[in-house]
Structures are given as structure tokens and as C-alpha cells.
Length: 194
Image 1 (cartoon, one colour):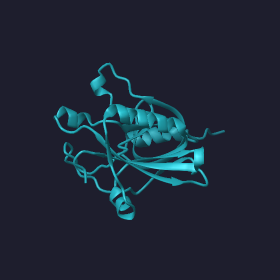
Image 2 (image 1 turned 135 degrees about the vertical axis):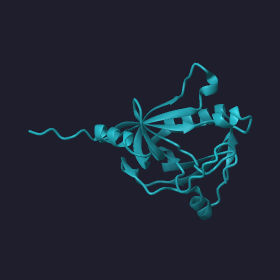
Image 3 (image 1 turned 90 degrees about the horizontal axis):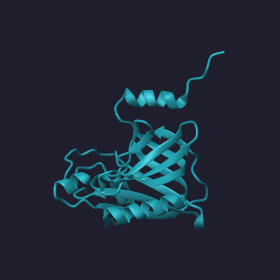
Image 4 (image 1 turned 90 degrees about the vertical axis):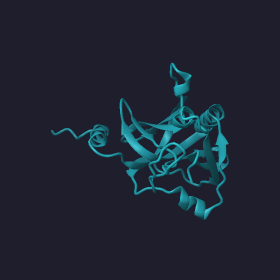
């Protein structure tokens, strides 16, 4: 009898042999932790590992500071918008490649206000919110290292430091909570992004 190919192994192979894929991943939060480094100046992520049936555990890496901006002597804060709504059903878990996403479209549809956050307050906010979530959605670029993950969970437009201007490739995070059936969509920008 022929053994069915392992979906996770096939995904690793596909990621390693192709350009970055923009994906939408929905999963159940499993663990949440702050990145730990020997050099505190290199700590810049909060990691949320999600259970995504068929694919196993996938880590979402959310920036809490811009190391590049700090090294250039510029504003290293992350600018965050949080849009709230309520949910009636949790979205199905899964991983799909998607055509893209643009903050400009969201900003054209609803009023969006960004608040600047330093590393520590944003780290604490994200850890608290992620630990309270019963479901999570993440948009960003898929990667494979010693784990499967999603990064670039922020605007990809040109910033004060990064000159590459990627349109329709903006990553985001949406968390669903049991209390009051609240959901929050998090949009993240770096200094100088439109």
C-alpha cells in the first residue's frame, strides 16, 4: 500500500523551492512568547504558535520594534491600529495562498487611527491579547526554517529605512476572544510608511 505524502513535508519543500508566498493562516493559539536573545538589542518579535490542522504548528512572528530604524538613529516605534468588531462563528482553521491585502483599502473603508508603541509596551500588549485569544488569523509571508512560520505581518510599503515599496502585500493579525465575542484586527506600520 502506498503511503500518502505528508502535507507538512510537501509544504516545507514548496516553500524552500519558490519565492515567498503571501498567505492567510487561521489557527488555534497554542503558545505565546517574547523572542529571547543574548543581546537585548536584537529582541524584536512576539511569537504566537498556532495549531493549524493538517499543517501542524505554525509560528507567527510579529515585530515589536524596527531594529533597522534604531540602528539608523531613526524612530524605531511600531504604529498600531486596532479595529474591533464582534463574531458569531470562529473562522475555520487552514492555510491558503492569497492574492494580497492592502491597508489602503481598509483605510478607505473605515476610519483608522495608528498609535505609536515602544518595544516593551507593544510586547506586553501583544502577549496579553494573544494569550486571551481563542482563534487567530494571520496574513503575511510563509517561511520554513526549523519550523513553519509567517512573518512580514505589517505594512510592506516603503518606510523611513526600507526603500522597497511592495503594494498589496500588507500583513495583519486578527484575534478572536471568548469574552463578548470580540474580535480585533491589528494593522502594523513602521515610521515613514503611508
